[in-house]
Image: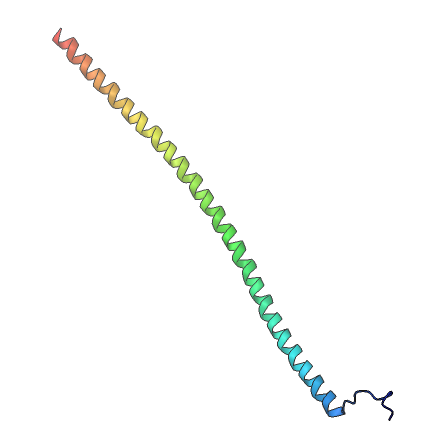
Amino acid sequence: MDKENAGIYISGKEMYESIQAIGSTSQQILTRISVMEAKLEDFGQTEERSRVAIKKSEEAYDIASKIESQQVWLWRIVTGSLVTGAITILLSFIRKSI
């Protein structure tokens, strides 16, 4: 062979080994991709669960706020009733003493 026409010579054995190495590497890549897909699916489920949990916590906060506002009205009614009762008793004592 001429030096001008000389090229790289790769034997059949070297080609076979290279192809086997590529096959092994591609199998490892596919395995890792499968694992990543599974983790991404789990992440999607986790994200959905967290959204549901946030929604439920917001609903619970709204319910607690409503109960608190109703409790304030209850205390106002009870206090008003006690004041009215005390005034009524005071006025009845004043009438009896006159």
